[in-house]
Length: 112
Image 1: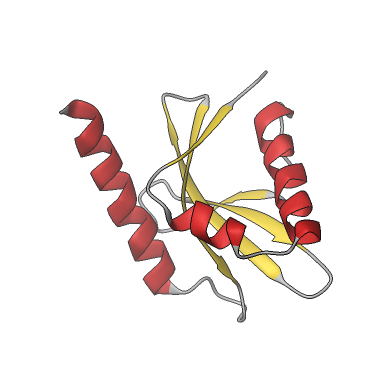
Image 2: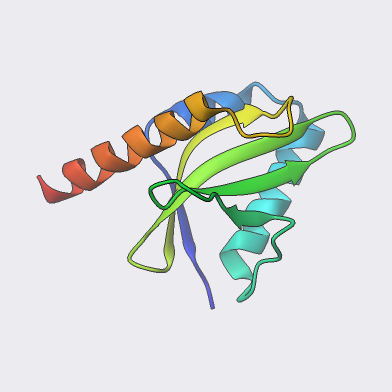
């Protein structure tokens, strides 16, 4: 099974470009898992409870815990919304709200 991974808006790209090469490599590795694994382990892709279909891609490096918030479109299309370095146990509500807003915009843009 192959999923297609796309980026919506500039949030992910801006974050990615600001990272060093090793972190970019790790992000690429985890996104390949999302892209190619039939059953992605929860360690790397987890549904966020009490959200409007938002998932978090988890990238764990030596110094940073990175989260890429995303959602699915038509099953095999993963849309990357926003990205941040996680500093607390809970995913910040502000980041989830942004991902939900981006999902609504994406679906609206798709219809137009």
